Length: 532
Image (cartoon, rainbow, N blue to C red; front, side, top):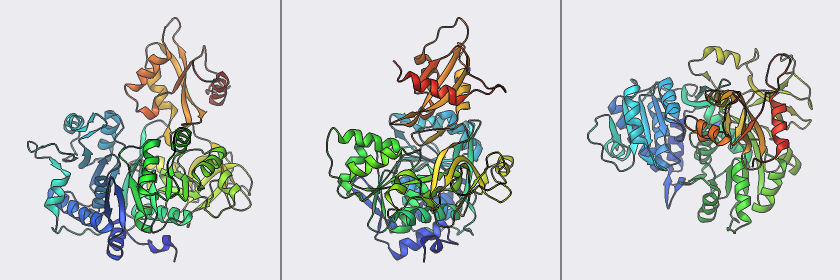
């Protein structure tokens, strides 16, 4: 029986309980020198769920996880599932304004966060945020600070200790119930909350794991963003369902990842193109023992075929690629290890189990195009989202009359059923695996007193996949430098959205209807080469 069939009708809590009962000693997490088994994770999730229930957190409540990759994130994730709550995974590197927006928009009643991370003081951040968030009743902190003076703040370890062995009300939860609220950028630059069910995540996780051949004994490295849907589904849940173990890293750079491969004898290496490019550069400087690796999975951003070939040769592995979206609970399609080399190099594989991909005419979307024709990619399947949270109009617009999700991406399906990505109809820049919508960047730049107008465009970059170039028209007579523009953006934008380059223009090229010609701008910037 296919893995996707075995998880049908399950919730994430029931899937964990089943796996912890049938294979309790199997390691799910490898963090530092201490492995965590399925039974241990299940027990800790029960304890945390009991303590949170005692505080009044109940089914349907939102629990935000603002944590780096760590066991506490995983325990919190499964505890929310056991309570029938909705988990809200947030990137801890977001700006305070972005975290505030998402906590307010999601109406989170509880947040789990690290006390300190990379010199960032999250206790100070939440001291400022909590008075502004009327729904946020409790803060659970991971660290060693003694916070006895505030009756709304609890230490993670204390809740685990207090909840051990305690019962809590068992909620009635169905597999199709809303479980995860994952934020992604909107076309206007404002975040959109993607509603995903238990079934969405389990179907995507099972389909992806089956496609790439993940199984017991595998040790997975390279998943550094558990707040991202790919880390949740293809990473965490894929490992939980198959008996693989996930290696969690304090550091997520290339050297740390290669160290983890060597130390933990990793067999499967997930990663965005940027990570693999950095690793290949490091291999020119020193060597690692990577002979345990058998498979590299590259996803999250456009992949150059040259990179696929280089990773296969230098790491000595089979390379597969995938196409994933937040709105589809991660993986839409993936190449298989036994696919012909040219298919693994030049395509993003075939749709995972239960998922249907169709290509439609961008101008006449009711017309489905024949094979080998370029058009918009549309997707239907068990991983496709419930909708955008509190945005019924945008949810309706995201689906066509046949119930297919409009991806906005351009591609074609060849005669053998393999999907080729060609481009995008949306003005999105994919920088290091993260979506950046130009309008948000442009709005910040145009608020600078020396700027008349601006356009942000993506340009190919060997390390980042796409770099952000700000094309700026200054106010007549104004004096402003590129570095000043970058610093201006950095004040309010996350690092992933801050321009990598700045170019000044007398005027932006426009179409007859007044639209900025972004393709023309991108070409002009590329022809100039690297900045001085």
